[in-house]
Image (cartoon, rainbow, N blue to C red; front, side, top):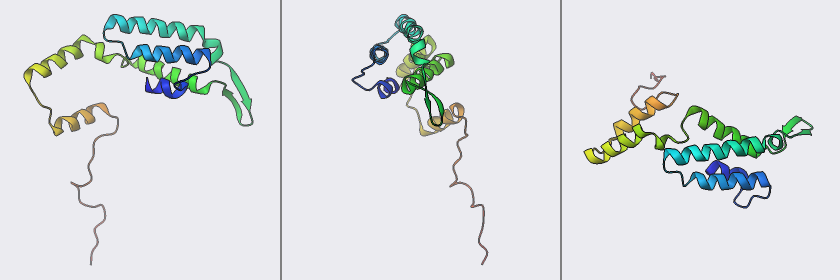
Length: 140
């Protein structure tokens, strides 16, 4: 929703922006898989209806650019989240089960768990520099 609001503003003027902003507001109300599938169908319909509008280009001194660049960027961003399968992760039954187990076990995550999670889910490995000696040592 943040990306949509950034691209459309809170008071969009173009009809495509108005519809996308309403879709973004609906996104905040998605709570289960059925609602997620309905939202995806609405988003797909929006994308198909406005595809020609979003494909418009304008000639600038540096070359051709999308006329509605901000809308194209947010569309591509949402499409990327959908293709990676992470836009509705919270609706996944496995995640819901893990959340319930975590709440019932009373396990409090530790700082080391956050570091391990970071190492598993980020492309650059966690690397602290304070545990290692400096690269150059001064000899007096």
